[in-house]
Length: 576
Ligand SMILES: Nc1ncnc2c1ncn2[C@@H]1O[C@H](COP(=O)(O)OP(=O)(O)OP(=O)(O)O)[C@@H](O)[C@H]1O
Image 1 (cartoon, rainbow, N blue to C red):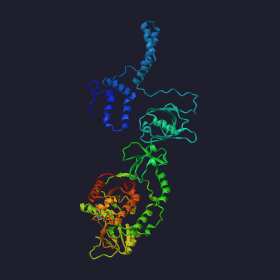
Image 2: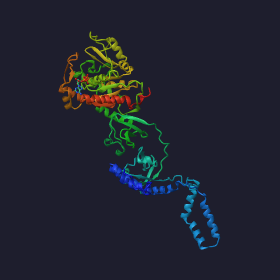
Image 3: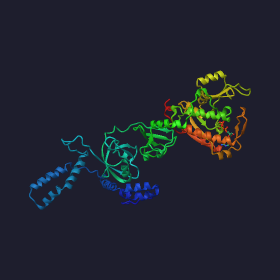
Image 4: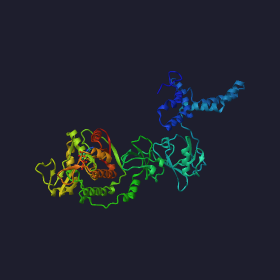
């Protein structure tokens, strides 16, 4: 900004500064709203008067004047009386007249107040015949620009009075500290509103700019300012106030997307909370559905979206990744796998509303978080895992799966697999020792929790790829999983990029491979959409595996950040 001209040449006069600021700031302010706000604010007459007074007072600052006496008012009174007793020369009469002028009396009175530094107002005693029923009225003057007032109103069902229903945290009304929930609105800008509908009042308010005067009857005093501790939640669903017909005021709503971090500012209302979105930097709170409301809504929607028969998960062995060298290209296996996931997901404990979170940064020496890769079959999880392992074999590690099939000559126990008997495998399943397990051609295969622990205890980042329905078993303070969803690109890009790629054929379990078919691509995209719909709220990072090198570098960067920066994790993971 260029230097501003000053009155004295050496010091910037505040008053001059104020008058040139709007034009000087103009090139730096993009929005027309902001520009008109600045104009209105710097052009406000009372502000200019205050600045003038401030400048005048500054002249006295160096001299630090002290009052000679603090009873100039009574001295003037005594003097007037004495002078009146003396005869009546013209000069005496003039002095008596001057001293009795109300302005001079007020000036002397102000002088004495300042000299005594007694600034508390002295209120006259209450009259004896006061009517206890009479309402005390408060006049409030707020300066409003285009920003909304940040309050909602309602009509009291019993009395018919217009009452302040909500004050939005951080909004204009809240910042003023003058209007409170429960206050009864009597007049806006001198217009009585007793007979007006709330919508009409809202219109009056919306059309008012600059100073607005409210006449209110204060409600019952609020308790001490809300000292609720800061609470952050991760939203597990999308919300758009525009599309919500139940919200008391659409303009007061706060839109958010699944995965956004919200700071809950008020839970006073059981149905509509007030929250700020951590991501958008807006200091004003908006209305969001409360957890309770969202749960109720979900209960109503749920039968419509997932009307699937419940299965008993313990009796079923869900599908396995090809990392176990099993067929997942067998369509029958894939289909039943997804059906089983759907029914497991919508278990009542899993209603996706909000999850309380806290910022967490791994301390030096602390175990690394488990990195879980999730994605549809063939999307490239193994390829990405392989690249990570090659990039830093000391830093990354993978689990060794268990199997009940017999060991081949070329294999060693604990290298390709942990080979255990069918009987032990079944006992381990029974004792919940597996993150996930499955059966293929009469043999069991599975990844145990202990195999994950074993990698983590070597201070390595354990890379695991699992079916998304097993995430719920891993989401504990011990593993603190960082879930990366690997997503396929568009079908056109799949055709282009996977020209030379091979998928493991489902025809045998010897790992023979075949090129991707058009059907494989379609299945991959469909499965990806299904996973995102059902488990999207659990994914912390989504990577589109279009160009492999780009996807790998995005993953590498995300994992670097995971180790160096703070991330939001469920609060229960932080106090273990
Ligand atoms: N971005 C990519 N561009 C080209 N080819 C790719 C890309 N990503 C993976 N591939 C190839 O696609 C094939 C399948 O990849 P990969 O085996 O890693 O999939 P996967 O997700 O591990 O599958 P599954 O879970 O069924 O084991 C491999 O031949 C791999 O090299």
